Image 1 (spheres, helix red, strand yellow):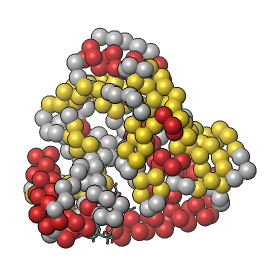
Image 2 (cartoon, rainbow, N blue to C red):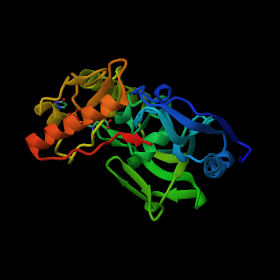
Image 3 (cartoon, rainbow, N blue to C red):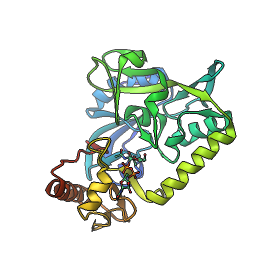
Image 4 (cartoon, protein in one colour):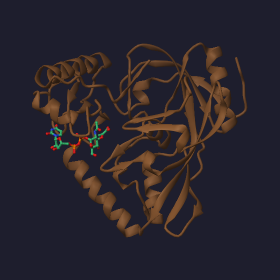
Length: 299
Ligand code: EPU
């Protein structure tokens, strides 16, 4: 077994305890990195443990299988507080670690009066997870602010990347020409200077909209399907196909927004997958559109 400074090897936790859907069985092990050096050692350690290495942030976009899972979870701790590292006349550059919770970052941006990511208010994920899937909401796309990304991979080691090295799209981020596992360590984000009052007011407005249209307090992983195009809402298509509120055991399509799969209590991944199939089939039959998952399936 590899032992490395900055990397702790822990027993495999239950994914049901680490994901916002509260679903999923036990991973093989957890590797907890508290430095870039620790992250670098993770692929080697996972290889000796014999499981597939996956990065876990706040678990807010994950649908994990029930039972024993051949996964080694890579988690990060000890992140620095977000920091303004460079300031121009109209903009500022903010350094943020991947393990920082998105609401913590947004709280700092509001306090500094830095604008650009207000639309992400209310998303519970980690900055690393939000970058990896290029989270977006209410006109804000995390990648719009992204200037530099530091990531670690098994094949390349530590990589410092700028926007030209990345492929960025709707709910998509990848490193051009890179295949296989990588884990984000930190990023630099470019924000516009505004005022704390204006940024806070916009975030409050977004939260009010979200509370009215999305089940923000339910156990969910946000939208379960991607929108098939910018003009088409998967939620609307599911709603029109009669899926809103449709339940199976402890799992249901939310009564507030049909594209949120929620765990009402005691739900299982098998029920979630059956509902996903039924929702997809109903939309295909009514609209001729095949919905693609937005949530990440493990293993
Ligand atoms: N609608 C319905 N029924 C529903 C849901 C929506 O008729 O059950 C209608 C709404 O009334 C509205 C339209 O569909 O006219 C669009 O709805 P909404 O504004 O909620 O946007 P969305 O396209 O359904 C997307 C993102 C959300 C993001 C919101 C706000 C995806 C898959 N979803 O939803 O992101 O918060 O826009 O910007 O891209 C997520 O990715 O997890 C997520 C929640």
